[in-house]
Image (tube, rainbow, N blue to C red; front, side, top):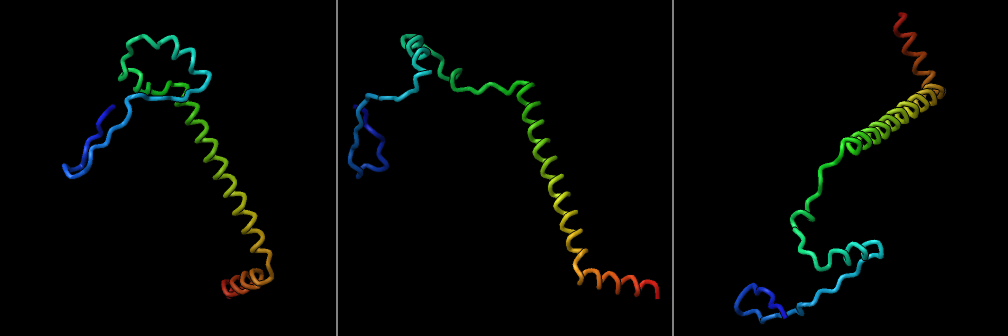
Length: 104
C-alpha cells in the first residue's frame, strides 16, 4: 500500500494499493514480453525524437496544398460572387449612374 500525500495535517490519511494494472493492445504484447525483465532507461523511452527531413517536407507540402486550395477556392468564390452581384439590376443601375457622372 502507498500513502498519498496530504494537503494538511487535518486531512485524513489515504492509501492506495501498490498494484498497477494496465490494458494494452495486442500489438504491444510481444514488446512487453521481450522487455519484461530488462531494466530500461525511462528517460530514453519518454523522449520524442526530432522529426525526420521527409516528415518535415511532407508536412510542409500538405500545409502548402491546403492553403493553396483554400486561397484558390476563396478567389473562385469571390469572382463568382462579384459576377453575380454585378449582374443584378440594382448594381447595373448604380454602375450606369457612376459612369454617367464620370463623363459629365
